[in-house]
Image 1 (cartoon, rainbow, N blue to C red):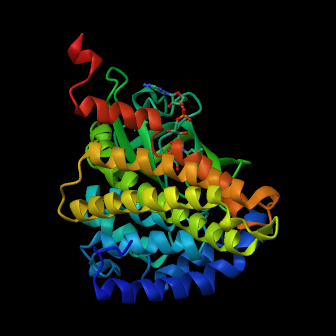
Image 2: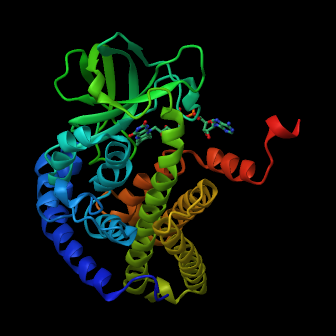
Image 3: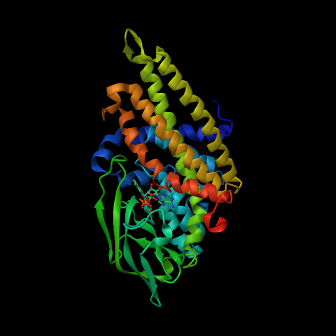
Length: 385
Ligand SMILES: Cc1cc2nc3c(=O)[nH]c(=O)nc-3n(C[C@H](O)[C@H](O)[C@H](O)COP(=O)(O)OP(=O)(O)OC[C@H]3O[C@@H](n4cnc5c(N)ncnc54)[C@H](O)[C@@H]3O)c2cc1C
């Protein structure tokens, strides 16, 4: 279905992003997957092309673009023509906003130019070995030691964990309050900051997911973001954008899987005719086409709402829930329609299938998304019982 939310300037921008992804990412995907991470230089190249944080202030090297559709295009074309393991979206749309929006002018001046140029790669560390969905249960602590914070704890499953130069870390600042959490910027090379294993995963092979350890890290007070006890509120505020970004990516991968499969079922023959000529194939493709078009329209609408500052936590959660679930169904059907080839790693659809399984887990599981949407309906056990 024709998408109505883009103007000619967006399409022009899209063409330049496709060119970048095709030239700088696609030819290296096999190597990135082999080495378990992308090259650091890829971020520098994306920065030089103006593809990191298009929204950032011109004073810090950004383009100052106040239109999320440009970020949407970068995410979509990275998924289609680049590689899902290149976490340009994590860098630009999930982590950088914490620094840009919560940071002081001095902090922005210190970090944003390197973030926009790609010299400083970003990660965010909330999840711990003992807690993920229940963020209020984190055990990492940042104790106020007068002129510095003393950071202790461990984080796990951290995307960009090996490559990151700056990590936004959630840590407990008030042991007496479940929600007494602050956000801190930990920098590469700080004493006591260690990286653990690069974790072996089912999919996302080009993405470096790692454990991080903080042993008596002395954090200057200037490395705290915003109020040291308001971290929980900040995380909630930024999670709507995180979930929208995730949805944009899930739709792009599902659309790509659909297109690959459409080509495949037209070419592959069984019983003397293309498998696309079987009614079963036609019906499956038709159902997917209809569902993808309907949900893409919803996501595009969410992007417009986000541009107006009106995207609610429930809207973003619904978007994340539905797109990740549809992506999972589409990947499964597309592997099935590829037959044995769908199970072979040399076929992109096989890799996309394993890459997509995590979509229903990270950035908040499907169950947590349902909780948020349900509570928005007033169906909250704490209030109803
Ligand atoms: C590849 C990958 C990359 C990641 N990147 C990052 C990152 O960069 N930074 C970061 O901080 N984290 C990251 N994560 C962590 C991710 O966000 C968590 O794994 C996720 O939030 C789930 O937390 P958990 O693993 O502790 O599962 P748990 O919270 O232990 O959940 C286990 C199961 O219980 C269910 N459950 C939990 N609570 C409820 C409830 N109240 N009601 C119903 N069901 C419930 C869950 O839905 C799930 O099915 C990443 C994870 C992966 C796999």
